[in-house]
Image (tube, rainbow, N blue to C red; front, side, top):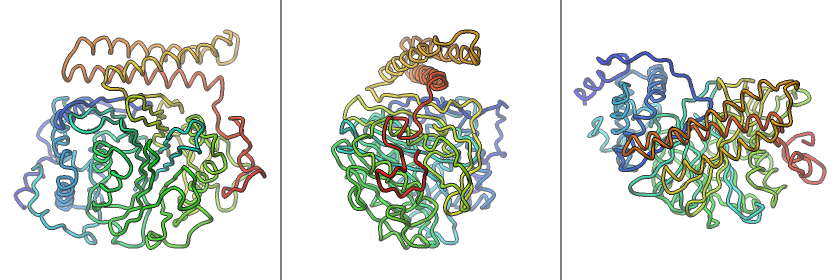
Length: 555
């Protein structure tokens, strides 16, 4: 073990013998699309080759955070234990991580296999975590806050399954990507990820399965955190190899995880459930357990009675759950999905992600309740799964709502009024999970054309004398410019092969989705999007026509 640690110390950041080219890397304001296709190693190599700059940034941040808490030897020991769980539970990820490191090196970034393991691991307190038998044979190489809901059947306009997922970070933008994965074995899928992670949430596969994920919040018990499989490895494995919610449940319940989490599973066959889980205890709840009818929600606390031992205090309200921090978001989900049952569609879900669009009339004494739309949304999504090639995801980088007020959670934690992205749009782009990168890219091109045409119709209502005309014209031009960047890359991709073709298809899809986001930004500047049920022609949120758990003034 000592010799292994000494060898690995030479691979740590700052100790590399290979000088890297110094280049400035800013976080993306519109998440780029990265296609992966082939064997596990090949997909990892393609990932590293295409996202090396972002991976290198995330690698440095991960080591900086780890070394503030632990010594190098403690970090390496923890990584060997993490690798033990990865190899045991999700063995395909070993080759993906090997390939990712090699791809980064090919792209000119000195990122090691050890760095990639760190990006796909968590580091619990070694003083309170148990060392698994067999981990001492390992050699290297061989708190997030989020909101999720889903609705289907009688709750949605057309009976179709729709999933909502937010990945909430801190006060800095994430170096993230959208992965569209076509593995040699298993299901094709789309997911978000911080560059270097094998996967993160949201996730949707081509079998009609939606997977949302959120942290379970803190626990006063040390046993609820331990060594185990982390979300960056468990989530992509589940969406790749589970065809439905029951299969996903059976996978995650047999594994030990490392930190408290919620696993939200729903499929087009009507199966839906949430696995509430820590390293020490787990429980399953289904639609109907708390009065839901054809919908579910999960945020950063727990609702099941079994899980109350992981929280301080009692159950909040009728649907807030155990744990004050996330209770307001659970209550908003209940009010939205219960009181507007039958009116839910993709535009309704997007509206939830913008709600509330206005600041409160005054700051209440205990703070304005933190809603799903918040300054710390890193990316948000609305998924429409399909058992076939008609599934699609609508993705917004950062918050979809134009949040101008800070908020305070019931727990007293502030969320400052900030915006992390350099040139963000607050708008959605659409990706459709077709049969291969060419089909996905061509579908993105069609959506880009529709977004540009819609923006053009509104833009043409202006004259050069109107205020803001010059800004709108520049934005319209930028949307078209992105479209043609996509078109040039798509032409080249169809003439290329192998890794070059995969990379060029990624550039094409990225160009088309950026064109969508910018065209939608122009359209929404001229036609404000719905940010409350009233904007959709529905009865007001908080009105006397229904019972509400959320304190609000009729939005």
